[in-house]
Length: 203
Image 1 (cartoon, rainbow, N blue to C red):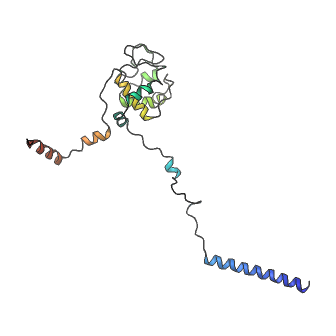
Image 2: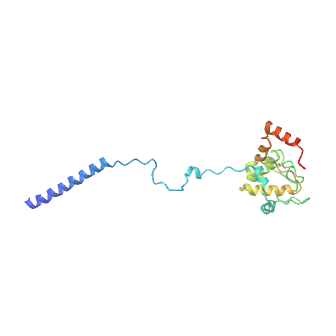
């Protein structure tokens, strides 16, 4: 091996040692911190667990208080192929629904109800009708009702208010917030109210 080759080899080795030395010094000066989570945070991103949690559904009593009867009539069109809600109307694939709110379950004259629905018992009050319309097959497994149900709670509230107007006309149940407000009167507040009532109005 000639002198020139030895010189080149020496320079290469020297360069490798220098590079190795810089690498060691760099590792001593800069220690990378381990990531708490893999990847990079994106501003405004929502955790998957949070995004997957559905907002709690409002009580049907609250939805009934703001329900739209005209929209309920539109929703009922989905039911009209099997039901009518006319006074004295004939049964179809499903029973006539005139005055259904408040009536006993599975008791409309002349209609052959499924045994599971007849065994359910109770009345078609607002909460029960909401449960039925949400998922008829879950309400009464084995029912003849082929309709899958109304997933939108506002649609259910709207059609229940409309059905109530078809011969039942029962007073709507108080929303939980309103009921709670009526029961929050303290003794002190009651005394103040009584004192105010005793003071004659200025003329």
